[in-house]
Length: 171
Image (cartoon, rainbow, N blue to C red; front, top):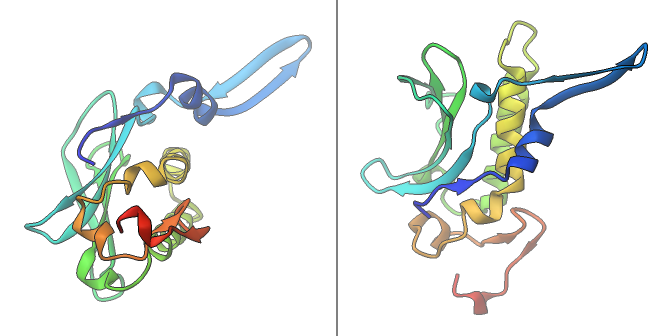
């Protein structure tokens, strides 16, 4: 799937809401800036890098830096906004994923994001949480195409981890 999956504005509104309180009859809603909310997500296979890439699109683009892909974690690397620190992408090393199910890879991504989010001095917790929720809610669509070599090599799990799809679906 190379096309962007647009995020429903109502879903985005739910993801953006941090707290909703009433004080003295006044309703107070705290939410993320629209600039920190991905408005679309997509998954694609980069055959030159042999990586499956999950990308998040924002209102404003910026230059990126990549973290990860070292001896400790050669499965997943993250594309981070150089100035904002927003999560712009997740790269999965297909050769390292090998026979692991996509569900295992998604769990690994979730563990990695949770680890980063729970660092005491990490300042982009809300943005990473929104991106993580979006990834999990759109997981099937992100990995849905049989044209993706990464997907064809996997035992493709229904709902990214619940049950395996039947082989009659062409995977």
